[in-house]
Image (cartoon, rainbow, N blue to C red):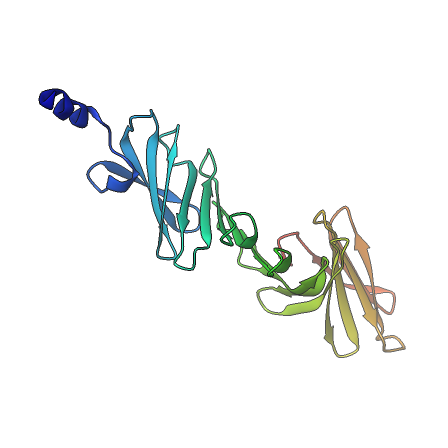
Length: 237
C-alpha cells in the first residue's frame, strides 16, 4: 500500500498551486499580461493556469495548452476577480465583482493591437464610466453616466473635443476656434458624421459638406473649396 501510494503521488500531474518556471510555459497576452501554463495535464486531464494581475494571483484550468481559459481569484476585501483569455489569445477580459460574484465593479477588455475598453460600475452594478483607447492611442472617455447618458470627451493627437452621450448610444462632440465650431457625431454603431458652423458673415464665412462615402468634410469659403478633411473611425484626421 505504501509503494502504491508513492507511485500514485508520482503519477499525479502538476496542479495550479505548484506552477513555476520549470514545470510551466509563460505565454504573453494582450494588456502586457502573462499566463503560466503547465507543461502537463493534471489528474482531471486539464492544463493548469496561473497569472498575476494588479498583484492578485489568479488560477484556473483549461482544456487547451496555449494559455486560453478562465482564471479566478479573491481580493483582500472579498471582491472576486475573473480573467477570461480568448481561445486564440487575441483578447483578455479582466473583471472585478462584488463579494456576491455577480455585481460588476469594473471590466477591462484588451485586444492584441493594444486597443482597450475599460468600464466602471456604481454600487448597483450600473455603468458609470467608460474609456475606449484605440490602437493609435486616441481615446473616448465617458463619465457621470446615468441611465445610459453622460459626459463625453475625445482626446486626439493635437486637441480634444467635449460633449455628451445620450441614452440611445449617440455621442456628440464639439470644439470651437474663433467663430467656427466643429461638431462630431458618433452613432452607437460607430459611424461618424461631421458638421461645421461659422457665426461670422461675409466672404470669409466658412461652410462645409460631409460625405458619408469618403468620410470627408469639405470646407469652403466664398464659394471656393479651402480644404478636405478625412475623418476615420479611429479618430485620425
